[in-house]
Length: 183
Image (cartoon, rainbow, N blue to C red; front, side, top):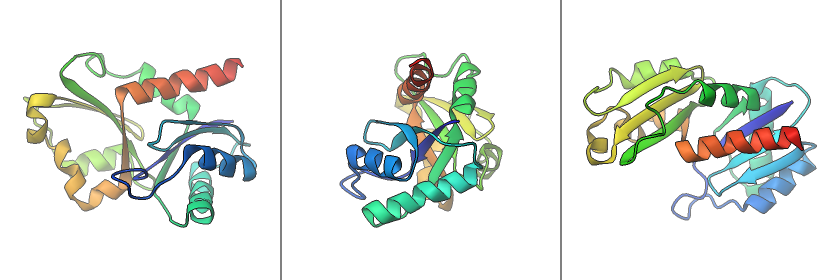
């Protein structure tokens, strides 16, 4: 089965450095197959026997501890989940210039709905949000980004339970997953 691990908080501002080539090798050494990484923000596509997502996240974190000496929160989703979520994304997400389009992914045990409730009601004049399972589609104009409810999430305890990818990265991960299937 094909999975995608989204590592939170690596290679940011020189903190928690992780070389993608080393990460790929570590995943292969752990027995995962068809391992592929994408950009330095910690995106790993891999295949493994069908396993619970919580178990896989724990295994992926153990790889981080053994290889890099630190633990990270990791969202693990099936490739099918991401492919379907992006296919079902709201029409306003990812297509307008001068707008930030992010895919926020809940890290278990949190859910997208829980995160959304915790952040509170959005400010419709400044942002759009749609929840689909562990995925939260969020768009906000660059000019008014700082006025949104979701822009404040990085300042609270909730931040550790999510990882963010922009629309381009989310779509590229979908394309890579689909290409691996066709190979």
